[in-house]
Amino acid sequence: MTLYEPLNICLRATEQRYPQHVMEFNENVLGPMECETKGWQAGEMLAFLENSWPALLEAMALLVVDGQQSSIYIPTYSKCKPAFQVHLRGHIPAQLCHTEVRQYALVVVH
Image (cartoon, rainbow, N blue to C red; front, side, top):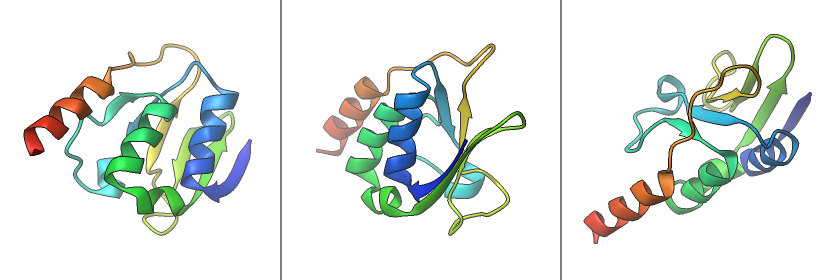
């Protein structure tokens, strides 16, 4: 599967097509994150980015799922390295609860 759409569409497609998935940010592509980078579901990531980095959701992205990889690239950041790694089958890392972390971070900021 290959999909070239804005990141928010790629995240929604991942959530709908692969409900049993876990994602992670690639800090080498996107830069340092102020949150845990692993263990995300696409819906959580979408909500997080809507609050923290909405412009990234509008960036064109390439979702690639084939026998070699399950990744989302954002060509404006890197055409060679994926911005997000998507784990779909086999042994996948545990999902973490990012909602509590995000709420805690928002409380600390206020």
